[in-house]
Length: 626
Image 1 (spheres, rainbow, N blue to C red):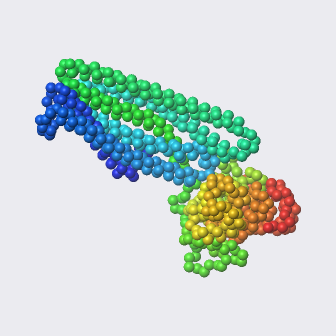
Image 2 (cartoon, rainbow, N blue to C red):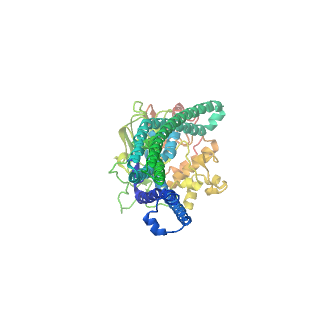
């Protein structure tokens, strides 16, 4: 609770307001039994009215006194109900605001964590933690902190009032509290451990659902439905078993709590009856005491609920804190360098012949294009003895050293598993090398501002990624751009013809997974996004894999335009994609084993295409590149 409090401390005014209403509600609750006691002792019995009440209502008929006491009961119950409702509303508002902060921080941390974390964690489990486990913080606040304050204040004030009525009976009533706390301590840890196991089992069910939905075409085509249903049934059976064990512990806990309350109530009734018979208490005072006794056990019961709630909520908060405590593998240095335009005020070189003109409105935060060069990224890419592995004992890159001058189009070829995609993912710092360095113009990427670096890179992946939303929103991808700029980017990417055939054109919602679009259409939207970003560095990771001939031709035309005037690194074996290269880098077993040039292709194309075939590329060279 101490650690979780920071998510609620900004709403301290709401919390204070709720506590103030809580005190007033407890006061009204303490006064509620007194009209009944006056009715029993002064209307039905021989005892006179208290002086303050006799002065207030005067000497009147008993019917009038009954009406006054009945009205007083109604007013007290209404006031106590209204105060409780207002207090609960403020507490719920503060709890939900804290829940929002928790979810925002968890989501922000998940975005900052490296791909190594996400690839090593089941996505269903991560989703469950970010959506459902975060509710534990609201539970901890409302049913933990606020209930503890309510029960604690009620218990304190009731003990004071009960002590003024009868000290020995109060001692008997309070004597049950140690037994209650003993029960809470005995059962608390067991309920927490069983609650954690139950949440983990539910998380595995969510993970299996997510995995099966993602692979549904494969499952259906191979007739794996019965196998997956059996596996899912086993997971749900395990979740049922874990939840049953959790609820079994809770039921035994509540049985023990009920027995403690029953012992205390029986003791009070027996001792109180003897004192009434002995003339030490009136019947009305005993009724007040018994009413307070039920109200005394109510906060004790709430405290016992707090014990169970904290035990269950602790497992959820621990799972959330496990995400928040995960160290960020890729971090920005405290003294990170900005990417600023060099030579401000100097004459800049003009764009070269054939350079691709900008298609987006450039804001002050967008990279300035200078003759195909990125302001602040003068020079070239240098990898110096780079070692990297997803598992430390299994390196994927083994001492890779290479240099790609600025404005160069370089291709990475090699067999599957050679490290091509891994090398490309080091450029936007999805990962950092374990040894060695990746630098631009002699500046290690780890010394640059992360947002500035990634703003300079347009990435086109092998599997096109689209987000739920409209076509225009997917092309813009968070950038501030006019509809004309978005349309220009789509035309440059050869995407506008199929966009215009969609029901609402650029405003068509393509949905999660973009099920309405073919693979080639999705890839052209990704290329349109790269055109709109107009970044000086283009990274292509097998952008034409699994495309049909027509889609491949569209993508080829778009890529031919997109790579002009940019520094391009492409992992591909497509001959048409490698048709206009400045250098070729051959990777094998995590090392650069050969560096070639376009002359090698022109001098001995048969040998070159034989190497491409050996690396898993196209079997035959094209007649002419698109």
